[in-house]
Image (tube, rainbow, N blue to C red; front, side, top):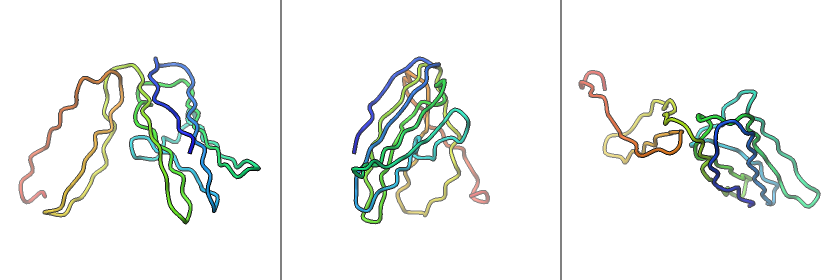
Length: 138
């Protein structure tokens, strides 16, 4: 798998990330940002094609990168045999922000992992807070 690298940018330029994978059967490539599908808007263009030699080349082009575009980008090459992934951060200078986090459910007694999808650079630290709910609200 061809691996894109970590980048740190000022807001404004266009950015392209590329992922190349080979496999039998031919894999499909899926992209995520901080573990979620990429935003669907006119600034994000995703392309994918297969070469004669069987490589699958996928790219994400982001026009006029902005602070909220920063985060951990990952490409996953998937076929019926398995999956392989690669990820790297894209840092965009600007004030820190936290993306909306989805509601999650957990089973009592089980381990729960929660991530904080944040953008902005540099980020000195992240502080976690938990709302207090009464037993009736849980």
